[in-house]
Length: 314
Ligand code: CP
Image 1: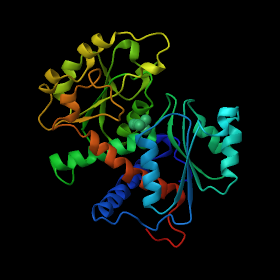
Image 2: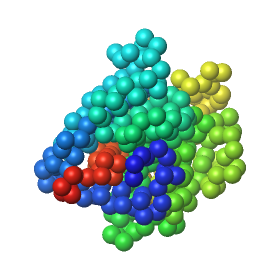
Image 3: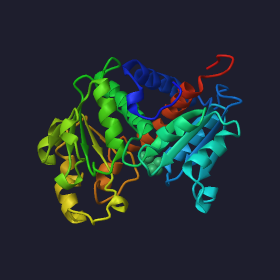
Image 4: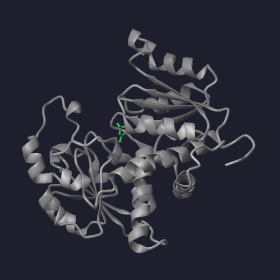
């Protein structure tokens, strides 16, 4: 795999291989063997034009635990702030002998554009409202582990019901998750105020619902997505209070979930808006497991993109 720009770059075998390899990397970490020689001699540049806590740091840890050299660059502090274009920035960095660029950008499609300009591998770390493929992969990794804990080691995604609730219009996470969960065989229900539903959603392979309270009792997992107020130039309708009453994972709504249902959120969370602290920190929450999975899954993605060790050693 030269690039990971979209979940559409993966077929079922490719996605499953990333999840299975991530399990192996995770098991190695649990044995306290943090560092593997797999990508020794390779250089990864994290090129982040938007802020990030989880994605940037987990890509950095993932690269370092595979013994790659990892360099972090952000728009602030680079010549982007002097007006250098994305093309010139990407080509300049790639010309230094970099093996992979991990790119986050506010413009949908930016990583795909960069992949056409440079010879090295490109990984999409979130582009505008388009996709966040490694987030979907770590979500699937977390959910698969959860299903195996609940239903046994042979549990699959077939028949698994996942509700995705939140600001779906502005979410790149929902787009990647719908593609991946569908590929893996899960059934996805989307719930949001009509003002926060993406255009064209009627053509997506999902069920669309209006009433959270009807949906929750049926679900194996509920994924809450952040209300992205910074992307709402025309104000926020409904109001935050109306949103929480209509769609928030409140303490009362926790009681509607099946006992074994998982609560997920990609972060960062708006506590008290789309998710209560009772839900975020309670027994059903898999949120910190998602964060931990980010390292193993990104190790797996870097391993795929960079082709492993020159000597073929894992
Ligand atoms: N989930 C996610 O992408 O978080 P960050 O913005 O902190 O990377």
